[in-house]
Image (cartoon, rainbow, N blue to C red; front, top):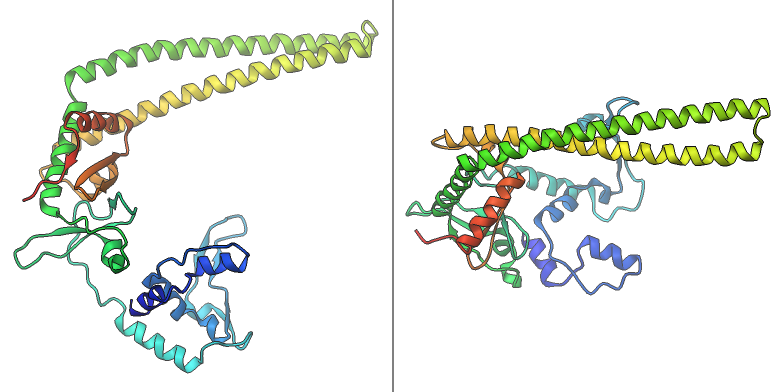
Length: 334
């Protein structure tokens, strides 16, 4: 982290900006160095003049999948190019990195961990360890890392209060979805959709019959051409017209079949959502797995406004209605 901060303060271009400049792009940005970038550079043996191959291999010649191979199976060729760091220094750094690896142990696995994003900078919202009073706080990780460079703002909030409020919102949205009125409307829509699906299938059958008729016409015309009843020009003119007609009907059939397939997928999603909501509402303490089934991400604004993004369109629409009715979700103080 000290190395990354030093390079950021000195405005040394990050690798992506450096490469852009080498290609002739007139970039005025420098970027902020990440710890992961520094660790990658310090762990890359290529800087000692060694080229490494065979880190991965294909599962089979038929498959596009690769698997990682153990280090003892890698092919290393030393002194392939000029080194910019000695092997002795590289080994020293390797030992330091190895001695600190895994020193941080994650003790808490919070319900919404990994789903929280900072609305203002797009980074993750981290959940800190409990303080001496047992309070747990969320904070923008980019601010925590780069706040000294005027990046973003703290976005501090009490995580315990936040979790309680979001679970309440989620239950409200789910209960609204399962309201009897809503279910009756869905049932009516479902009935009309069955009728619509039947009509679409009838239309597809009609188009298929027309294609068969046009194809038979083409066969008869071909026989007439061989018998000399019609000229080659007449045959080609009419044959092209029939082929274009058939092509149009085939495209119509394809579009209608896609429409039916889309409706069937939608019904499957609705059934899956119904089962998921029933399971969630029966839980006293929801699991992380079921929360991730419902929620794609949650964005936290600097003013404590919260935007919840659901994986299911019906829930997102209900959620938007709640947001308008209640103006905005806000994280209230404990």
